Image (cartoon, rainbow, N blue to C red):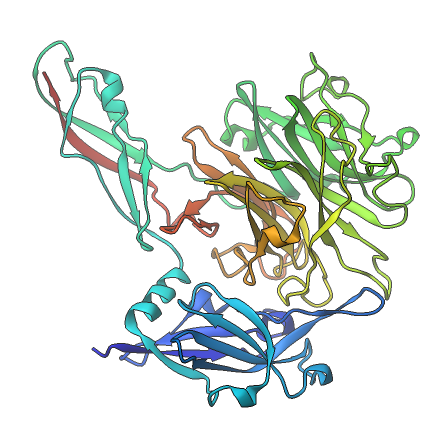
Length: 538
């Protein structure tokens, strides 16, 4: 066994129907072991993407990469380069004689260093020998995370039922991460009033959901409220007309056969609600329950609205909600007069309360700006009015965000964990296999209106390469289940040529380094396992 592993960088051939230009012309990475078996990182999906440029007309000119190279710097840092080209592979005259440069110490996290003169770099090739530990650690990180086993204590000293129930199983995963999981202990034979040793059995079960879970629905949201669970989404089955809610005692019951859908916002020309009833989300803001959504009047053009649940109103009743209002700027004017706004979400962190939404100008014209994510501060007592100017968070500059002219950054949704706020968003085509999740991260104590507070992943965190049989996963939301686990709800398609959006749910895993992993498929996670231990009483 050698102390080094060969690392290769490359692009892939363009496959029009399954791996188009925006994906193929990115930098892929693979490791080759001493057995000369080449193993791709990230399941052979691109890792490093060139940013597109913005024209004088505020349109995006998509870019790709060719002729990637890899080398080692004097301090041991690894450099990766590529020639920037247009999305279709044609030479980009504006970058002729220069190459894009990324640096990395671990082949996991990459810093973009900008353009550089290749003549000032060591000789570039497509292969570099890296030390075994670095290479294999990176290969593991970019590979699917799978469940590997569990342990429970051989004995439990307990005086009460509660002390037994508090003992958790430790579940291990292929990336070295470990998590605790509740055990359903069968304690009927244990006499807590009589000293002795009692053998008990138990089961460890992970909640699983089939895919597709609900067919013909997009942008799903699962929400707990006052002891019940609610489901709301964009209803493609009814041409996105009206907002419908389901109510049940448990999340699985929300998707049971014959579940009733309650219409809470109907088609109404008189009120200006006629089309694009899109992306509804429940949020508790200032102690009140609101529904954020987009809707259009007779003239097409979705705009962000919200409506507040009445104090004594029920979620499932149309008259349980106050009249919807359009979200406005701090001066009271609409977010936009001519462009479109949609997919608004709410984020509360230590530094303040914010709205994030998608904004797009001149859609469908030669000067289409593409959809962009903006953020602004709000006062939770008047969440329909911004208290700051909007700040641009992200545009679809990477090839995976802008596949064949889709130009999308949309569907933001957030969760907070250990002083970090994570905002997922979607790029690519909303009802095609190229749809994918991106990730923005910031410290919860930072000013989220400062663009420097945010880190944007170069690589998408969930794609049609992530989970077998799920194509175009995107426009997600998060909720916490009864076991305290973070769950992600999303829509995807059942085939690479399918366009019907279908909902799915899975658990969000957290790696050994604490970062979220969204591709934990049901077959790769724990199902149901039996365990046993001895309870010592007295």
